[in-house]
Image (cartoon, rainbow, N blue to C red):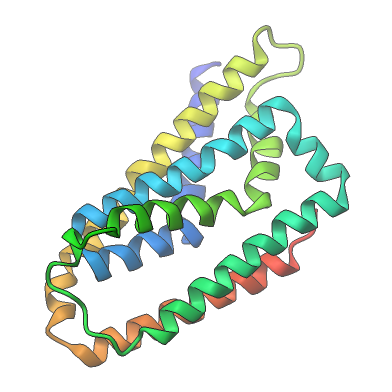
Length: 208
């Protein structure tokens, strides 16, 4: 790839990654609720959830999702159901006080990782995004095209990790102030619950 192509890819990928979405919302919520360590774990988990979509795009599974309405709908509605569950769980616990040492709570690490991976794993639009976005920077007939797409996808995943980690660390840095204001905690949790519900609605309306 030329320097101009790399620049265009990096700028476009950065804009896409920094735009708020499911993964960034979850990372910020985790940083506020559990602290820096959990926020970084959430960033890693959301990035891991992106990788299967990248592999699907390279191996042709994205084409199957694009062609098969049933396959796309099944994955989409699983994602919708999980987002709605996240919304309900967040809303139900909105009045619970934040724990000072929640960052070290037993079992917390597994819960953060599972939730972060699952949120992105059950979003079929990520597969179709990679399928449509990455080949734009790899001309048709390019030798080793699959390898180049994997490289671009790896760079995209790295950007995702860095940006989400920054979001999470910033949120965790504000956690002490949030802890001192229980009413603010309740309002933030209600806002996060509403945001998860909105994202579920957006995903439900997505088409191939």
